[in-house]
Amino acid sequence: MTEPALDTRAAPRRRVSVVGVLGEVLITAGVLVLLFLGWQQWLNDIIVGDQLHGQSVHQSATWNKAEGPAKPTDPAAPPVMSATIANAQRFALLIVPRFGADYYRPIAQGIGVADVLNKGELGHYPTTQMPGAVGNFAIASHRKAYGGNLEHINDLKVGDHIFVETPDGWYQYSFRNLQYVKPTGIGVLDPVPEQAGVQPSDRMITLTSCNPFFSTAERIIAYGSFDKFFPRGDGPPAEIAATVNGKA
Image 1 (spheres, helix red, strand yellow):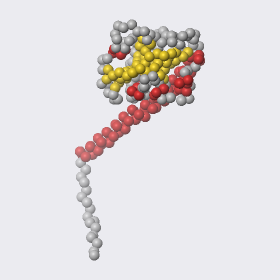
Image 2: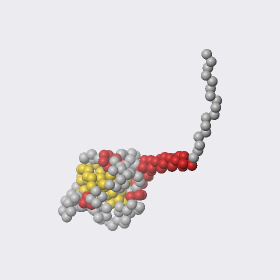
Image 3: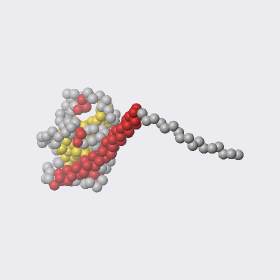
Image 4: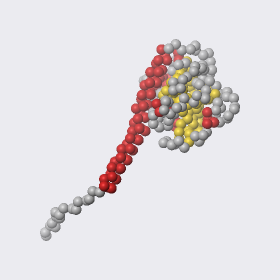
């Protein structure tokens, strides 16, 4: 039987149109944009996070070299930060073990986007109380990008510790609950959250960020209540010692 002959005729060449070339260029550009966004939201958060961790370790070591205040007699009555803090000035550090042993982030005064939040810092609402004061110590940060400081805020479990470090020492808070509000829900910043005009008796911390990811449709809020204070002279609490000493 004779094998069928191969068809050696050249296939017709496809015409290259301007529209086709333009379409391929646009597809390529779209892929590059997606890759850039992926880098910004993931890799850049890792890079910035590592930088902020290193800066926080250095800041804590600097505070260790300075002479701290007298040790309080009652750990339930911590010293209150009373110094005037300039806008965008770093004055405290945040440690949340639930977010990982290498989570160590600076807190600056103010919530300006360009001068605070976009620099990877958490910002303190100037109208709220300072660490150690009775009332509401409220801070804000981006959820993703610029370090992704509060990316995992929704992972907090009741009882998780939240530490705020200052030149005086470490304030330990325990996480209570989450709340979701509209961007206009500024009642979360009240001395007693959502109870305007009520005189506070507790020391609280409030973390605020945007929700969901890549949206400003609402705010996710995490509340914590003060437990105890650890003076700097006694060293950091065992739970966060490795983080503070840069050995995490």
